[in-house]
Structure formats: C-alpha cells, structure tokens
Image (cartoon, rainbow, N blue to C red; front, side, top):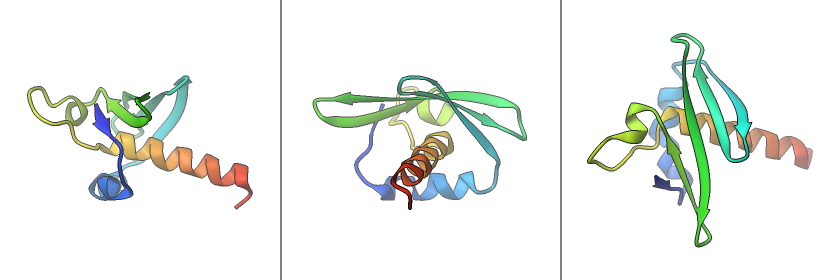
Length: 93
C-alpha cells in the first residue's frame, strides 16, 4: 500500500498516463477498475483509510513490486484525476 501524502507523488505517474488512454469505472466502494484502452488490460485500484491516513494500492506490477516499495502507478494517477474531476463537477467549478 502507498500512503498518499502530496500531489508531488503523482508527477511521474501523470506523465506516463498522458501517453496512454485509460478508462476508469467504479467497481465498488473505494474500488476502481482502470482499463488501458490500447492494451485491453484492467487493474484494480483500492483506497482505504487507516488511523485517519489515506492509502491506496493497485494490483499492477508497479503497484505490487514484491519485496520493494510499491510505486505510484499510472492507474492510481488515473483514478485520482477521475475523482478530482467528479469533485469539481459537484462543486460546480
């Protein structure tokens, strides 16, 4: 799991995301399916709160990196951008 602390964590992931089209859909509460439109591959991004801190995980290879710290991947960045867009629409911005 990755603790989400600042927007700076998403800089490189957002750059990678710009090169590929992703589709995001909500699967369940706090669970999102992200599909790479070119490759047809879908990964799941899950958000959770522990002790007031926000954490996220993705089941892609970058998010699972066995034995090493997981990375903020383009799938996680896609969901964050998606949720920010929804939030802005609800606020009327």
